[in-house]
Image (cartoon, rainbow over all chains, first blue to last red; front, side, top):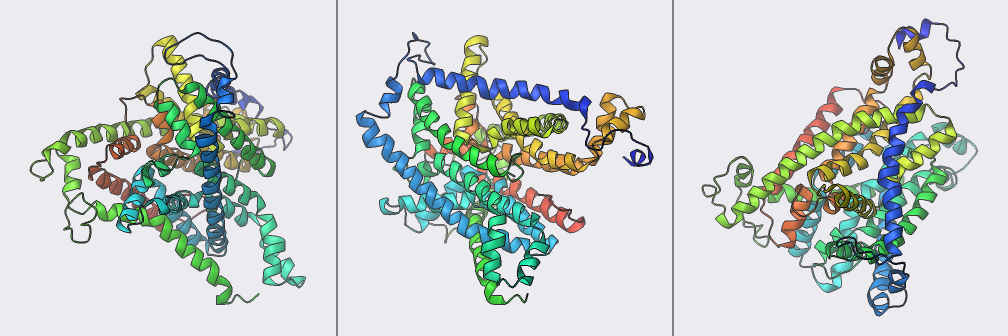
Length: 285
Length: 286
């Protein structure tokens, strides 16, 4: 590193490390094998009668899809579960945003050392096993005696907020930290009040982090199955539970794949949103 | 601009509330690891004990007054702990090395191709675990059909490496962008081999990114539940899937609480030491 400075380097400053390009090729192959191939398999079994576990005859069918649109099951179980999942994960995301944004905002105004400590404390709970944390929430609801039918949904929301809140705070903080303080000062110099500065300058500039945070909270809570299983004693069925059931029971892979495709559609929407504001995913961690 | 207390009231209140809701289960796990009985209703009147900690290090459960019907359950937990430590160590080491190499490769491309590669990289990060788990399950079922490789240790290891690498790439790439793009060429001109140009010139410059990436990989792997659940088959357990399995059978020996507190304490101490001994550079996570 030190030696390079004193040497006359003829190469263009923007020239990239050309000869290290091939380091990325094995990764492309790896992603191809582990993402693209199973995605094709997923589509294949969603449109066929092929039973994965026993290896039956293959024939093309739309039945797996019509199962989630026309059947009794679709009306009484599938769509209500989707609705419930959206309601719960929507609530979780909104609560996480209103709780988390002020935390990120406060962190940004702290001294670097205090910031780092708060950041550490936000990541630290991830070192406590997530399933055990969910079980602990169940214990808390049992102690509070709120483990009854009326409270199941609210209990699930509380437990999920506790699980996913750090994933809302961290991307917002990453973006807030990058805002040049001079822009904020300029806003004050031009006569804007604190409130105006926040809503017209800071908030719009942090939109990228907000979108990443919303997606990183919304998608996991939309598809979570362990929280609802544990906290509602398997009484509340969410999208994640439907997929999980299909995978546990034998021979349910075809319909399970259809459920997965429905989930993938939601996650593609999220993916596109994140990629629009953050091409290389710098706010994701 | 004068900052009054009233304008900070809301952020401070939010922060207190946030930490409260995040830390409640963590604190409860801590308390429960020291209480004697397994029953929750008696938690107030319970007396304190270290027997769950002791049960991690001995097989003589009778002397700890742990009912013998729990013995086999605690034994399977110990297997699960060993599995977790082995999987996490291996997957962290492998994904840190390969994630760094891939990040160096990705960084050498033009912006357009780099964005495409990062999109591929970010799929497992954004995709919900349940979909990633399901997709990996499909490929492993295929693998089983063609090669007879049963789901277990190997498939879990591959899955953990798969979801860890993107975090390493995401941590290393910002550091790579900061270093001089001619570093590699210069090292080659000065007589480095292709290998030593990377290890001696690039790696030291991006070390903080690599360490952050490794910590991410470790954190994601030690805690993983959903993906492991899908790809582990029916006989292989890590701590998370073991807890889930025990929960479904309605009894969880509190030995696992003790294990969890030990892991958490190590992380906590590491955090304290790193925060109070060295200067914090910008953008470092842990």
